[in-house]
Image (cartoon, protein in one colour):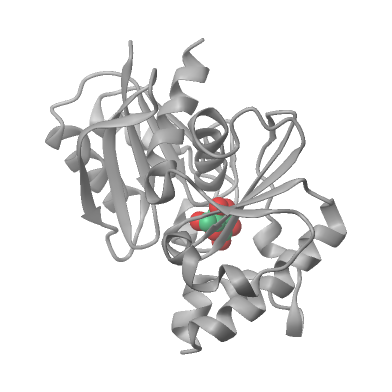
Length: 248
Ligand code: BGC
């Protein structure tokens, strides 16, 4: 099977597309539904089904989910409804859609995509991908192998708050700071990550990575910093890559 439906669950939207696993490209259009509010498992499952129905899809679905995901179960709820804690994401989504669903952390999914088809391809060193959105998600690879569920967006920062409360897009919007000030903050965060992990490459993903050209001159850790090649589609593509892996 070369085409798998990948679905990226986010705090503001749930996006899906068919992914060609040979090329890593989307097949046809993306379809997005707004994340329901409150984003309870029941409400999200209906939104998920809207996507599988839109594509008239029957088959295995890959799902990137914004939480720690262990054996299909949501083990944290930083930017999602707390009612998800301890819930089996795969079960909830597959019961409603009728399709087998494989779920992984959303940043890990974006990482799979970048390592398979994007700027991380062939990189044998330590690669840290950071998705910048409502939260800060991270995916860490060494020799192209993922160390799953890293949560470096939650390193304790100022005032005992997680780093994502200081330099995610969500924080930028909430605190109404300009992009220059945001980039200065994010640069401090990159330096901190460098002190802890000494990566060989930083890859920036998520919505903010689309504007990379505007702020790249402010970022100056030792390791190179590059925007994700697949930009906002990395989560969808990586979810499909993950599902294909689970089927092996
Ligand atoms: C969550 C992560 C997630 C990231 C990006 C964080 O708040 O803890 O699991 O990957 O947001 O969605």
